[in-house]
Amino acid sequence: MFFERPDSGELAVLVHLDLASENEPEDPREFEELVLSAGGDPVSFITGHRNAPHPKFFVGTGKAEELRQAVEEHAAGLVIFNHNLSPSQERNLEHELKCRVLDRTGLILDIFAQRARTHEGKLQVELAQLQHMSTRLVRGWTHLERQKGGIGLRGPGETQLETDRRLLRGRIKSILKRLEKVRRQRDQGRRSRLRAEIPTVSLVGYTNAGKSTLFNRLTESDVYTADKLFATLDPTMRRVELNDVGPTILADTVGFISHLPHKLVEAFPATLEEAANASLLLHIVDAHSEERQTNMQRVNEVLEEIGAHELPTLMVFNKIDLMSDVVAR
Figure (tube, rainbow, N blue to C red):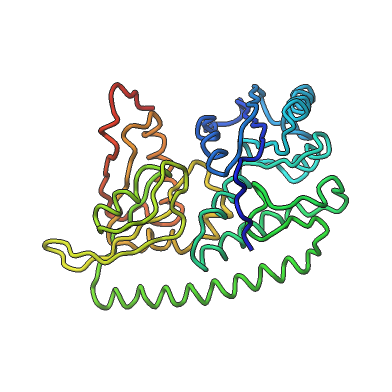
């Protein structure tokens, strides 16, 4: 059961640290876009520097006090980190701040919960959220017992912290069985296309690079597009006629993002399999983005992870009309 999105955003304090121990730091601007995509209303952005995360709070004790004051000053109900937190760090912060705390993985999972439209997509989101939740079930979080749906809590329903782990495992097992049935049906469709010698061209790229807009132009379709991260979640396929090729399947896929949580890579075979089994990849790049070189590399890393890095690939640079003196990084 998915929660209805509130008319106004949740008041949220954002946290981003520059860590000396991180080889590939997260982008704070992208982080704020993610929060806005989730429906958050940022009221404070706390930044800092550390050599390594604090084992108890991720941030130091002084920064934790700064967070507590920001939550109190702005009456925020949520603190969101641009980093992945351990279950104990998340729990310690919630006890200290007396509000919900969400890490980067939880934030991305929530956005996926909002975007899923198909039956399979909703099952995949629920599976990923339940797997994430299972590591965070600890009895005694009385300050959150009555929390309802909000950012990080959409998808499977209320976070009932007293949920029995056995019931949780049973639900995960049930979803896996249903997804396997859908997967077999999808495999059958793919084999039928192969027998008919109909090639598949998959659009891949960093999130918000403009894949769905290009997909609509190529197929004369009306797939949902928006200038926000993860506007497209469920894979969309259309049959088109190409000169010198004939009938071809064009597949739009979910956008990639830096440090895409493995829970999502594992839970979303529909999108990833269409890329891994394509005859050709169209790698869409936002040419206007200052981070385009970095984003291209991050997409290539995910393609390698799913075994699609050696497929024939055509680079497509999008949004060139927005370019002026952009410096690539």
